[in-house]
Length: 192
Image (tube, rainbow, N blue to C red; front, side, top):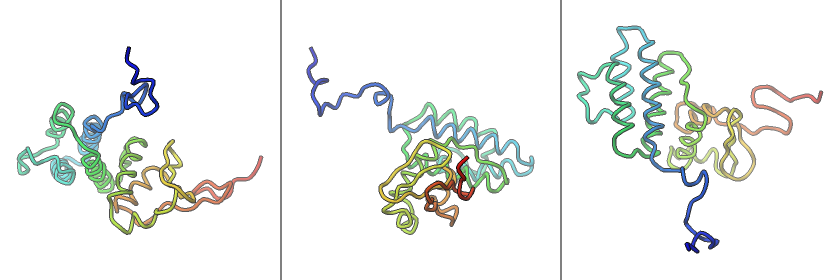
């Protein structure tokens, strides 16, 4: 009989914890696939340039020939990432940042999953630019459109993408304190 599973400090994982991993291959591959969708929707004459820019900014182009990289290569890149070596949260953060920049260039929504944005925001909150980390220090940061929060202290809130953009230094608008009964961007809510 395995008694270790009954010990309070056992390292044995159960339920959802057992499926948790630090390998971000699937998440990075999904971000690359989203970049492919955006690049394909761009004007034809810009597609290859945008795809190459995304791949270079995400640091995923090291194994490919940058000069010959084209939109269609993003599909192969996503497949290579999905079946290749493990990817870290740092790799996911670079890919998400590159996707947000690509979406901005095209003036479209990035379409990143809120939980992916939460992972990236949490990583950036501990490793991003000092001024961004200092702006949220001593606060709980909460996404208004997702079920994640991190930190301790008075609450700062914004959408998941707004938080990620701020912590990745793509926006100068930090999450803000929310007064009781107020939703960010909506003013005070009134009782019905």
